[in-house]
Amino acid sequence: MEVAPASSGVSNPMWANKVASKNTTTTTHGEKTADKDSDNGNKTGAELLPPKDFHNGIEELKNYTVKILEKMREQQNCMEKLVFVTSLTCLMVVGYGIVGFPCILPYFYTGAAPFLVGLRIWLYWGVKWQLFLVDFCYFANLLLYIYLWACPGTEEVFCVVFAVANGPLLFAIITYRNTLAFHSLDRMTSVFIHILPALTTFAIRWYPSTSMPWYTSFASIDLGADDRLPWEWIVAVPFGFYVLHTIMYFTVVYICVKPDEQYWDTYRYMTGSSGGIISKVLNVFGPKYKPVVFVTLSWLYTLMTMLIGVLWFKYFYAHCVFLSIIGLVLIWNGASFYLDVFSEKGLDAEPYRFCVKPSEAK
Image (cartoon, rainbow, N blue to C red; front, side, top):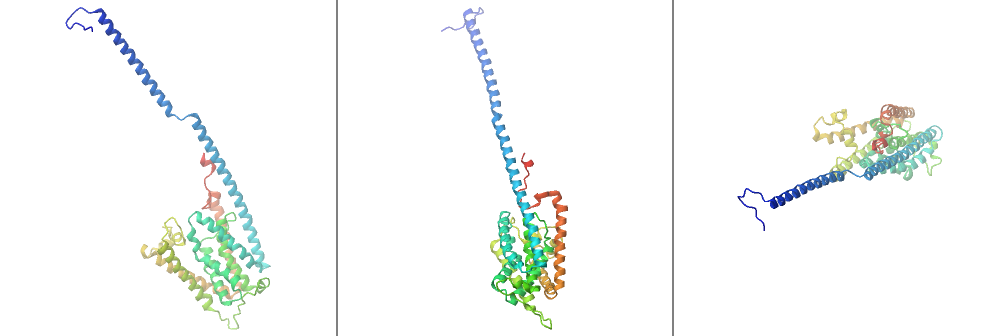
């Protein structure tokens, strides 16, 4: 083993050569190590970038999504064209029935009501609006259906059905701003559910010929020489049905079921606007008593519509005039919808429509 002299001033050539060789090796190794680290750093950065196949896959996915959306919108457009044609055809059939052939209205209602209500159940369940399906208007339609096929000759039942159909049900067209939007299944369903019972009872009340093609005779109301109205059946009993429905509804929905806020119903719909007139009226006594105020006002409103409906029951021309006014309201609301809402939102104004446009998926 060779050891360098500790104090010698004379350098050992052999030792110096070994040290130089070692330093050279160390320096070279350091350079190689640095180069290797640099290469590793570059390689790691390159690996962080996605490959070209990844970018191509994203573009293909976007294009596929756009095609799917375009296909869905084409199907929806086709469906809304079909709804438009069907709505106008039904209006022509109903108009022809009122003017020239009233006996078709009970048959038309018998076929249309279950079909429309079934479609509404399917649509509303998807947007969590199923609580709307237990409103009084559906109860009124069920009552008319029972009358037509179970007891069409019972005068008392007809009086109850007439009061409900031509009172709160018909006034609901004004209250809820029903619209003749012919392409909209939801809006046209609301129109038919609210107006068809009134038109059907109109035909039965004023056109005795309506009974001819039916399986039995409809009730014929004769007020007599003194024009005595059956107040208990045309006001008291139907109003009692409404009160009973309200009590059962709030008991089942808000005491037993207690649905989340995402589930809408008539109460939440009417009280949802914080700055509206209805909301201000309902909060007169504070939020605590809002349900009580809502129920009380709904009872008074329903009683008022039933009392006014006595005029339609007693006077033919008054009934005709009011139905014409309701028709004008529907037409006006339809014009307002197409010019104010549809002109801006287009077909995406439907609440349950697939509203993502193909351009938004890109």
